Image 1 (cartoon, one colour):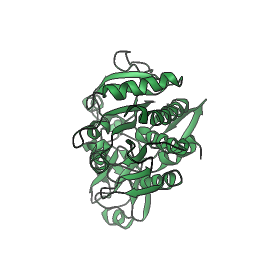
Image 2 (cartoon, rainbow, N blue to C red):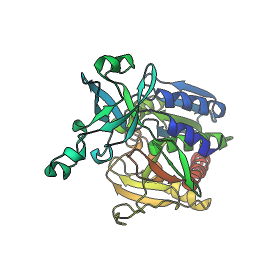
Image 3 (spheres, rainbow, N blue to C red):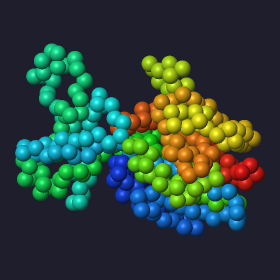
Image 4 (cartoon, rainbow, N blue to C red):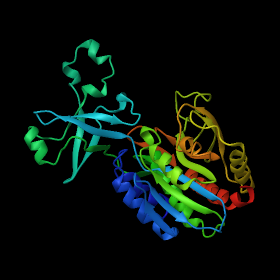
Length: 347
Protein backbone atom coordinates (compact mmCIF):
# COMPACT_ATOMS: atom_id res chain seq x y z
CA UNK A 1 0.00 0.00 0.00
CA UNK A 2 1.03 3.59 -0.54
CA UNK A 3 1.43 6.07 2.30
CA UNK A 4 -1.93 7.64 1.35
CA UNK A 5 -3.70 4.27 1.32
CA UNK A 6 -2.32 3.40 4.74
CA UNK A 7 -3.43 6.77 6.10
CA UNK A 8 -6.91 6.33 4.63
CA UNK A 9 -7.46 2.99 6.34
CA UNK A 10 -6.13 4.24 9.66
CA UNK A 11 -8.12 7.48 9.47
CA UNK A 12 -11.39 5.71 8.77
CA UNK A 13 -10.90 3.33 11.71
CA UNK A 14 -12.44 4.21 15.09
CA UNK A 15 -10.00 4.33 17.99
CA UNK A 16 -11.26 6.66 20.68
CA UNK A 17 -8.69 6.97 23.44
CA UNK A 18 -8.71 3.88 25.62
CA UNK A 19 -10.63 1.93 22.96
CA UNK A 20 -7.98 1.56 20.24
CA UNK A 21 -8.73 -2.07 19.24
CA UNK A 22 -9.55 -1.45 15.58
CA UNK A 23 -6.48 0.71 15.03
CA UNK A 24 -4.28 -1.67 17.00
CA UNK A 25 -5.28 -4.58 14.76
CA UNK A 26 -4.48 -2.54 11.66
CA UNK A 27 -1.09 -1.49 13.03
CA UNK A 28 -0.14 -5.09 13.77
CA UNK A 29 -1.09 -6.04 10.21
CA UNK A 30 0.70 -3.10 8.61
CA UNK A 31 3.94 -3.46 10.60
CA UNK A 32 4.29 -7.22 10.40
CA UNK A 33 5.90 -7.45 6.91
CA UNK A 34 8.60 -4.90 7.77
CA UNK A 35 9.80 -5.94 11.24
CA UNK A 36 11.22 -9.06 12.85
CA UNK A 37 8.61 -9.18 15.60
CA UNK A 38 5.28 -7.56 16.46
CA UNK A 39 3.93 -7.73 19.97
CA UNK A 40 1.33 -6.10 22.18
CA UNK A 41 2.21 -5.12 25.71
CA UNK A 42 -0.04 -5.46 28.75
CA UNK A 43 -1.53 -1.99 28.39
CA UNK A 44 -2.26 -2.33 24.67
CA UNK A 45 0.64 -0.61 22.91
CA UNK A 46 1.74 -2.22 19.63
CA UNK A 47 5.51 -2.69 19.34
CA UNK A 48 7.18 -3.64 16.07
CA UNK A 49 10.85 -4.58 16.51
CA UNK A 50 13.45 -4.47 13.73
CA UNK A 51 16.66 -5.99 15.02
CA UNK A 52 19.99 -4.31 14.35
CA UNK A 53 23.59 -5.05 15.18
CA UNK A 54 24.54 -6.32 18.63
CA UNK A 55 25.06 -3.45 21.10
CA UNK A 56 23.75 -0.96 18.50
CA UNK A 57 21.64 1.99 19.71
CA UNK A 58 17.98 1.30 20.48
CA UNK A 59 15.65 3.75 18.75
CA UNK A 60 12.03 4.19 19.83
CA UNK A 61 9.60 5.70 17.34
CA UNK A 62 6.27 6.58 18.93
CA UNK A 63 3.01 7.48 17.18
CA UNK A 64 -0.21 7.41 19.15
CA UNK A 65 -3.11 5.32 17.90
CA UNK A 66 -5.88 6.99 19.89
CA UNK A 67 -8.11 9.84 18.81
CA UNK A 68 -10.28 12.36 20.59
CA UNK A 69 -13.88 11.27 20.97
CA UNK A 70 -16.69 10.60 23.41
CA UNK A 71 -17.92 7.88 25.76
CA UNK A 72 -21.53 7.18 26.69
CA UNK A 73 -22.18 8.47 30.20
CA UNK A 74 -25.91 7.89 30.65
CA UNK A 75 -28.92 6.70 28.62
CA UNK A 76 -32.18 8.55 29.28
CA UNK A 77 -35.52 6.81 29.59
CA UNK A 78 -36.38 8.39 26.21
CA UNK A 79 -33.36 6.70 24.58
CA UNK A 80 -31.03 9.69 24.26
CA UNK A 81 -27.33 9.37 25.09
CA UNK A 82 -25.38 11.75 27.30
CA UNK A 83 -21.63 11.61 26.96
CA UNK A 84 -18.23 12.46 28.42
CA UNK A 85 -15.42 13.97 26.35
CA UNK A 86 -12.23 11.96 25.86
CA UNK A 87 -9.35 14.29 25.09
CA UNK A 88 -9.33 18.00 24.34
CA UNK A 89 -12.49 18.89 22.40
CA UNK A 90 -13.90 22.37 21.95
CA UNK A 91 -17.61 22.32 22.83
CA UNK A 92 -18.31 24.69 19.93
CA UNK A 93 -17.59 22.01 17.31
CA UNK A 94 -19.87 19.31 18.74
CA UNK A 95 -23.38 20.49 17.88
CA UNK A 96 -25.01 18.72 14.90
CA UNK A 97 -22.02 16.44 14.25
CA UNK A 98 -22.74 12.99 12.85
CA UNK A 99 -21.24 10.31 15.07
CA UNK A 100 -20.75 6.56 15.22
CA UNK A 101 -21.43 4.61 18.40
CA UNK A 102 -19.29 1.48 18.63
CA UNK A 103 -21.14 -1.41 20.27
CA UNK A 104 -20.58 -5.15 20.58
CA UNK A 105 -23.28 -5.58 17.93
CA UNK A 106 -21.67 -3.19 15.49
CA UNK A 107 -21.78 0.48 14.55
CA UNK A 108 -24.75 2.71 15.29
CA UNK A 109 -25.13 6.09 13.60
CA UNK A 110 -26.33 9.15 15.45
CA UNK A 111 -26.29 12.92 15.60
CA UNK A 112 -25.40 15.30 18.41
CA UNK A 113 -28.46 17.37 19.20
CA UNK A 114 -29.65 20.17 21.47
CA UNK A 115 -32.65 22.36 22.09
CA UNK A 116 -33.66 23.77 18.66
CA UNK A 117 -32.61 27.42 18.10
CA UNK A 118 -36.15 28.32 17.01
CA UNK A 119 -37.39 27.99 20.58
CA UNK A 120 -34.32 29.29 22.39
CA UNK A 121 -34.52 32.57 24.22
CA UNK A 122 -32.34 35.41 22.91
CA UNK A 123 -29.80 35.08 25.72
CA UNK A 124 -29.54 31.33 25.05
CA UNK A 125 -28.63 31.91 21.39
CA UNK A 126 -25.65 34.03 22.40
CA UNK A 127 -24.05 31.34 24.54
CA UNK A 128 -21.91 28.38 23.53
CA UNK A 129 -23.86 25.21 24.27
CA UNK A 130 -21.63 23.15 26.53
CA UNK A 131 -21.26 19.42 26.00
CA UNK A 132 -23.25 18.54 29.12
CA UNK A 133 -26.29 20.23 27.56
CA UNK A 134 -25.95 18.17 24.40
CA UNK A 135 -27.14 14.63 23.68
CA UNK A 136 -26.81 11.97 20.99
CA UNK A 137 -29.89 10.83 19.10
CA UNK A 138 -29.62 7.32 17.62
CA UNK A 139 -33.30 7.11 16.69
CA UNK A 140 -34.25 4.93 19.65
CA UNK A 141 -37.81 5.28 20.98
CA UNK A 142 -36.83 4.66 24.59
CA UNK A 143 -34.22 3.20 26.95
CA UNK A 144 -35.29 -0.38 26.29
CA UNK A 145 -34.93 -0.02 22.52
CA UNK A 146 -31.54 1.69 22.90
CA UNK A 147 -30.30 -1.26 24.95
CA UNK A 148 -31.64 -3.72 22.38
CA UNK A 149 -29.62 -1.83 19.77
CA UNK A 150 -26.50 -2.67 21.79
CA UNK A 151 -25.98 0.62 23.62
CA UNK A 152 -24.18 0.41 26.96
CA UNK A 153 -22.60 2.86 29.37
CA UNK A 154 -18.98 3.32 28.29
CA UNK A 155 -19.45 2.66 24.55
CA UNK A 156 -16.93 4.77 22.59
CA UNK A 157 -18.24 7.36 20.15
CA UNK A 158 -16.29 8.64 17.17
CA UNK A 159 -16.99 11.29 14.55
CA UNK A 160 -18.55 10.06 11.31
CA UNK A 161 -16.02 11.43 8.81
CA UNK A 162 -14.51 9.60 5.84
CA UNK A 163 -11.12 10.20 4.22
CA UNK A 164 -11.21 12.15 0.95
CA UNK A 165 -8.71 13.75 -1.41
CA UNK A 166 -9.66 17.35 -2.21
CA UNK A 167 -6.76 18.84 -4.15
CA UNK A 168 -3.25 18.20 -5.35
CA UNK A 169 -1.97 15.92 -2.58
CA UNK A 170 -4.36 17.52 -0.07
CA UNK A 171 -6.52 15.20 2.02
CA UNK A 172 -9.25 15.58 4.63
CA UNK A 173 -10.03 12.98 7.23
CA UNK A 174 -10.74 12.03 10.80
CA UNK A 175 -8.10 11.50 13.49
CA UNK A 176 -5.07 12.67 11.51
CA UNK A 177 -3.90 13.36 15.08
CA UNK A 178 -2.20 10.98 15.14
CA UNK A 179 -3.04 8.45 12.42
CA UNK A 180 -0.70 10.31 10.07
CA UNK A 181 2.09 9.67 12.58
CA UNK A 182 1.15 5.98 12.56
CA UNK A 183 1.11 5.91 8.74
CA UNK A 184 4.49 7.68 8.59
CA UNK A 185 5.93 5.15 11.02
CA UNK A 186 4.66 2.18 8.99
CA UNK A 187 6.01 3.65 5.76
CA UNK A 188 9.38 4.42 7.38
CA UNK A 189 9.71 0.80 8.54
CA UNK A 190 8.79 -0.32 5.03
CA UNK A 191 11.60 1.74 3.48
CA UNK A 192 14.16 0.98 6.17
CA UNK A 193 15.67 -2.02 4.42
CA UNK A 194 18.71 -2.32 6.67
CA UNK A 195 20.04 -0.47 9.69
CA UNK A 196 22.58 -1.05 12.42
CA UNK A 197 20.10 0.28 15.01
CA UNK A 198 17.46 -1.82 16.69
CA UNK A 199 14.26 0.07 15.96
CA UNK A 200 11.12 -0.14 18.07
CA UNK A 201 8.09 1.17 16.15
CA UNK A 202 5.49 1.78 18.84
CA UNK A 203 1.82 2.56 18.32
CA UNK A 204 0.91 4.06 21.69
CA UNK A 205 -2.43 4.26 23.46
CA UNK A 206 -4.14 6.96 25.52
CA UNK A 207 -1.89 9.82 24.44
CA UNK A 208 -4.80 12.24 24.37
CA UNK A 209 -5.51 11.76 28.08
CA UNK A 210 -2.01 11.94 29.50
CA UNK A 211 0.63 10.26 27.29
CA UNK A 212 -0.02 7.03 29.17
CA UNK A 213 0.93 4.34 26.65
CA UNK A 214 4.27 5.93 25.83
CA UNK A 215 5.12 6.02 29.53
CA UNK A 216 4.87 2.26 30.01
CA UNK A 217 6.24 1.29 26.59
CA UNK A 218 9.35 3.40 27.06
CA UNK A 219 9.97 1.89 30.50
CA UNK A 220 10.02 -1.59 28.99
CA UNK A 221 12.17 -0.66 26.00
CA UNK A 222 14.44 1.94 27.65
CA UNK A 223 15.73 3.26 24.31
CA UNK A 224 18.92 5.21 23.70
CA UNK A 225 16.95 7.79 21.71
CA UNK A 226 13.25 8.49 21.29
CA UNK A 227 11.45 10.24 18.46
CA UNK A 228 7.74 11.06 18.64
CA UNK A 229 5.91 11.24 15.30
CA UNK A 230 2.90 13.49 15.65
CA UNK A 231 1.05 16.44 14.14
CA UNK A 232 1.32 20.14 14.82
CA UNK A 233 -0.88 23.15 14.17
CA UNK A 234 -0.65 24.48 10.63
CA UNK A 235 -1.34 28.15 11.27
CA UNK A 236 -1.58 29.30 7.66
CA UNK A 237 -5.30 30.04 7.88
CA UNK A 238 -7.27 33.28 8.34
CA UNK A 239 -7.28 34.71 11.86
CA UNK A 240 -4.05 33.07 13.04
CA UNK A 241 -1.03 35.30 13.64
CA UNK A 242 2.48 34.22 12.65
CA UNK A 243 3.62 34.45 16.28
CA UNK A 244 0.80 32.18 17.42
CA UNK A 245 1.38 29.30 15.00
CA UNK A 246 4.19 29.83 12.45
CA UNK A 247 4.19 26.33 10.94
CA UNK A 248 2.67 26.10 7.46
CA UNK A 249 1.22 23.33 5.35
CA UNK A 250 3.30 22.32 2.27
CA UNK A 251 6.58 23.57 3.85
CA UNK A 252 7.81 20.23 5.19
CA UNK A 253 7.78 18.53 8.60
CA UNK A 254 8.13 20.50 11.81
CA UNK A 255 11.09 19.79 14.09
CA UNK A 256 10.16 20.68 17.67
CA UNK A 257 12.68 22.81 19.57
CA UNK A 258 10.59 22.98 22.75
CA UNK A 259 6.98 22.55 23.84
CA UNK A 260 5.14 22.32 27.16
CA UNK A 261 6.50 18.84 27.86
CA UNK A 262 9.90 18.65 26.21
CA UNK A 263 12.98 20.73 25.54
CA UNK A 264 14.51 18.73 22.71
CA UNK A 265 17.89 17.28 23.65
CA UNK A 266 20.63 19.29 21.88
CA UNK A 267 22.20 16.18 20.34
CA UNK A 268 18.83 15.09 18.96
CA UNK A 269 17.95 18.56 17.67
CA UNK A 270 21.24 18.91 15.81
CA UNK A 271 20.84 15.38 14.44
CA UNK A 272 17.39 16.13 13.01
CA UNK A 273 18.42 19.46 11.49
CA UNK A 274 21.72 18.19 10.08
CA UNK A 275 20.07 15.17 8.45
CA UNK A 276 17.30 17.29 6.93
CA UNK A 277 19.80 19.73 5.45
CA UNK A 278 22.20 17.02 4.25
CA UNK A 279 19.36 15.22 2.43
CA UNK A 280 17.73 18.45 1.19
CA UNK A 281 14.48 17.64 3.00
CA UNK A 282 12.40 20.78 3.67
CA UNK A 283 11.74 21.37 7.37
CA UNK A 284 10.42 23.97 9.79
CA UNK A 285 11.43 24.72 13.38
CA UNK A 286 8.84 25.24 16.10
CA UNK A 287 8.86 26.28 19.72
CA UNK A 288 6.43 27.45 22.36
CA UNK A 289 3.34 25.31 21.76
CA UNK A 290 1.36 24.73 24.98
CA UNK A 291 0.79 21.03 24.25
CA UNK A 292 3.06 18.00 24.54
CA UNK A 293 3.72 14.71 22.77
CA UNK A 294 4.73 11.18 23.74
CA UNK A 295 8.34 12.40 23.75
CA UNK A 296 7.64 14.24 27.01
CA UNK A 297 7.17 10.94 28.84
CA UNK A 298 9.76 8.94 26.93
CA UNK A 299 12.42 11.49 27.87
CA UNK A 300 11.80 10.95 31.60
CA UNK A 301 12.09 7.16 31.48
CA UNK A 302 14.36 5.65 34.14
CA UNK A 303 17.62 7.64 34.00
CA UNK A 304 16.44 9.67 31.01
CA UNK A 305 16.24 9.32 27.23
CA UNK A 306 17.34 11.98 24.70
CA UNK A 307 14.22 12.75 22.65
CA UNK A 308 12.89 14.79 19.77
CA UNK A 309 9.65 15.34 17.87
CA UNK A 310 8.95 15.36 14.15
CA UNK A 311 5.45 16.56 13.26
CA UNK A 312 3.30 16.78 10.14
CA UNK A 313 1.67 20.24 9.77
CA UNK A 314 -2.09 19.70 9.99
CA UNK A 315 -4.99 22.12 9.88
CA UNK A 316 -7.98 21.87 12.26
CA UNK A 317 -6.57 19.26 14.65
CA UNK A 318 -8.72 18.24 17.62
CA UNK A 319 -11.83 18.68 15.54
CA UNK A 320 -13.97 16.11 13.68
CA UNK A 321 -12.07 16.62 10.39
CA UNK A 322 -8.51 17.75 9.66
CA UNK A 323 -6.52 18.62 6.54
CA UNK A 324 -2.92 17.94 5.55
CA UNK A 325 -0.63 17.80 2.54
CA UNK A 326 0.67 14.35 1.60
CA UNK A 327 3.95 15.97 0.50
CA UNK A 328 4.58 16.93 4.14
CA UNK A 329 3.88 13.37 5.25
CA UNK A 330 6.18 12.01 2.53
CA UNK A 331 9.01 14.32 3.58
CA UNK A 332 8.48 13.25 7.18
CA UNK A 333 9.00 9.63 6.14
CA UNK A 334 12.20 10.57 4.30
CA UNK A 335 13.49 12.42 7.35
CA UNK A 336 12.72 9.57 9.75
CA UNK A 337 14.48 6.99 7.56
CA UNK A 338 17.54 9.19 7.07
CA UNK A 339 17.74 10.01 10.79
CA UNK A 340 17.69 6.33 11.79
CA UNK A 341 20.52 5.61 9.37
CA UNK A 342 22.58 8.41 10.92
CA UNK A 343 21.98 7.53 14.58
CA UNK A 344 24.75 4.87 14.93
CA UNK A 345 27.31 7.53 14.01
CA UNK A 346 26.18 9.84 16.81
CA UNK A 347 24.80 7.71 19.67
